[in-house]
Structures are given as C-alpha cells and as structure tokens.
Length: 465
Ligand code: SAH
Image: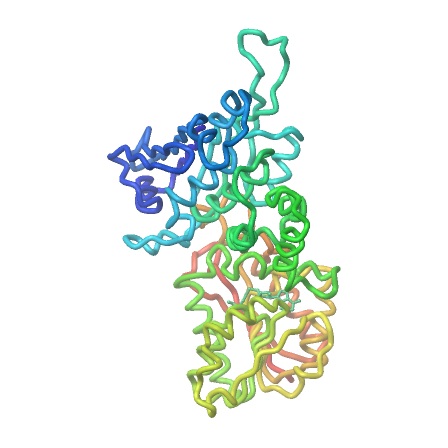
C-alpha cells in the first residue's frame, strides 16, 4: 500500500519540516501489523513528494492476539495492498505531529493551506467512483479515481472494487492527513481496529472542523464505527451539538469548519482587528457588541482596553463560544474585569432584545457566512432593532483573491463563504442599507493596497444619523 503526498508550494522541501521527516533519508517504523517506510522519490524546491509505504505482514496478523481460529483466507487476502484502517493507524503513528498540526521547526507553515496532491495506490470502494467523489469533493479536493482491473492478464475477469485515487487541493497538511485518516478507515470494509469509546473520541478529534458539516457525515460515522449503534449515536451527538436550532440557517455551520479562514490567521487578521478596535475607540463607545465573535480575538482586545465598560460577544455556535471562554480565561479573570464581559449564544438573523442599547457593534468576517437570502433579515436585526450608534463590518475583497498565490482561481477564501464581494458590491449593499435605516457609511481598505485590485479586506463604518 502506497500513499504519496506531493506539494508544489515553494520551497517544496518544506514538506520535510511539515512531516517531520528528512527528505534525504529513508526511515522505517515497526507497527503492530508490519512496517512503514517513509522516503522521498523527489525533493526539489519546486516539487517534493513524500511516500508512505506500508508493508503489512499478513502472517503476523494471523498469529497476533486476534488471529485465533483463522483460515487460509486470513493469510491470502487484500490487506497488504489496500488503504485500510492500517493506513489510518500508520498516519497517526508515523505522521502524528503533522496530523495534529504541530511543527516545532517551522510553526508558521502549519496553518498555511498549500497546494497538495495525495495519491492512494489502492482504495477499496464497493460503491464505486461516485461515492469516492461524494466523500472527498465536499472537502475541497478535485478527485480522480481510476478503477483497478481485477487482473491485467485476464481483462475479461472484469473490474475490481479497488481504485487508484488522486486528490488535489489547497489545504493544510494536517487537514489532508485528518481527511485520509477518517475516510480510509470509513471505506475499509473490514476494520481491524477495536472500536471502543476511544475510537469515538479519535473520530471526533480527527473530524474536527469538517466532519460535522460534511454532507455524508452520518454515513462516514456509521462506517467508521462499523455500525455500532451506541458509539455511532455518541459520535453523532458530539458532532452535532452545536448545530443551528433553525435547520434552515445553514450559515451557522461556518464555525464547524475552523474559525480560521484562508487568511484569517496571521497579520492580516491582526490588522483588521486593529482597524476595528480603532474605530470603536474613536467613536467613544463604552458599551460594545462583537457579533459573530468566533473564538474571541476581538473580545480579548476590547477587554484589554478600559474604555469598553460593557462588552457582549455573540455567536450562533456554542463551540465557538466555548473556545472564546477558554481563550479569554473567563473563569480566571479578576471579578472587576469579568463583570465587563458577557458571551451569549444567538443568531444574527433573528431579532434579539439583548442586543439593544449599545454604542457600537463589530461584525468581523461574518456577513459572508450568511445566505444571501438572509441578508435582509440581518440588516433589520442590526440596523433597525439593535441600532447601535456605530457599526463596523468587515468582509473580504474578492478582487484581491487573484493575488493569493495558493488560492485556486475562482475559489473563495473559505468553504463556508456564501459570497465574497468586490469593493463596488460591498459599497452598493452598504449604501442601500444606509438609505433604508438612516445611517451614513464610510468604506475603507484593510491591509496593503494593490493599485487596481484594492486591499485584501474591506471595512464599512456606519454611523447613525
Ligand atoms: N469575528 C470572528 C469570527 C469570524 S468567523 C473573527 O473575526 O475572528 C464567522 C463567525 O460567524 C463564526 O464564529 C460563526 O459561528 C459566526 N456566525 C455565522 N453565522 C452566524 C449567525 N447567523 N449569527 C451569529 N453568528 C454567526
């Protein structure tokens, strides 16, 4: 069984840092079912490929503790050749740090989506190519799956249930490994791992940020857990705990993917938050809202500044609020500071009395997660009912996307973005809202400006007339 991972990110040999495996050496690892070897068939600055070769030992398997009473079929089978739950085990053991998204030498690399291509030499799938596509395409990969003939000498024996699968996409390496970890095990018709409570935890952990919003989530969970009812129920309960109450409000799933978008981490986001904070300070706001607060980065800045006497963070996602609570260390704040901030769960498309009477509201990188059909409701909730004196809204500037090296042409910056506006589109929307609700607006660039395409992000500052 061979898995190769190729990148054309430059320098491509960064892959060695990300995988914690030196491109210059062949390394071998003893695993319970055989050996794993890691080597690099190619390693140049422009293109680098890492290969994980699994040498599954069927005899050792049969002789192992679970081998009693086995027959010839246990010795002569496809286990050595196919991607199975053994691949998942090997990924976790050989590429454990990369799977967890850790990289001591180059921490800056880990969070960056880079162009990656993975080839799995033999992936079993009884349901054929369409099912392979259904599993991987929603995760942002372009998928090529070629059926392996049953026998090359006797082609009339027909097709096998095996596919050579190639996935290409711009993702973080840890995401790719997590996807392969879960989906190889889910496709394995004969799972060898023991399915205990720990397996449920592993699934939830490895599925974080994508499994809960995968259209085939339930099938994946059932197959991964070998249709064991209690475990399946437990996993699904954990994965769906912060699903929107209103099922139509699919926009809420934004958070289930990580809070970080394509470029929400790092300098640009810091600049954006700095710009928003400045506006709220200049406006002299004391009571402030952070709507769609996510993991609470803006809240942390607001809390640091004594001007903001009352801070309310709202998000539709319970999990995002938990993250915010954790990162703000709310339960360990001194009482005075603690009394300045509150977190509530709520949705921006329903009128909410708790949002009334504030001086300023920030809505940072949220609007593009709303379904266009819900924008009118959002406008009324914000400008008509909550009606703060100042409103700051930020959103990506789509025109700038072509300048992101690693963003495939025509794609948006995050899987959950429902749209991304050009500067003209954002302005048109903002001006219309002003007319309807009695505000004035100023539009500003955020981040370094390109002469034709503008800045990566844009900000609208509304002031009540
Ligand atoms: N403002 C944060 C998070 C942006 S991510 C930051 O800049 O870091 C978008 C956030 O909007 C997610 O946390 C998501 O849960 C939230 N969100 C999406 N739809 C929402 C809705 N209808 N009401 C409230 N929050 C929503």
